[in-house]
Image (tube, rainbow, N blue to C red):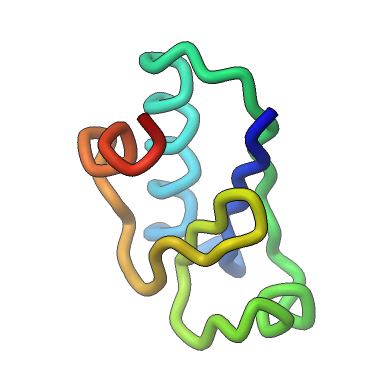
Length: 77
C-alpha cells in the first residue's frame, strides 16, 4: 500500500494539494494512506524548504507547488 504525505504548515496551497491528492486517489481507486504533515521539524527532515511538498513512499516527488488533480493522477497512476 502506498503512503502519501502532504507536507506544509496549513497554508492555502497546502490545503489545496491535500484536497487534490484525496481526489486523485479516489479517481484512480488507489489503496493508500494519505497523511497531512504540519510539524516543521518533520518537514525539514525531508529536506524540504518550500511547501507544499508531496512525498510518496518516503520519496519527495514535488515541492513548492500545489499539483493539479491531473498532474497527481499522472504521478500516482
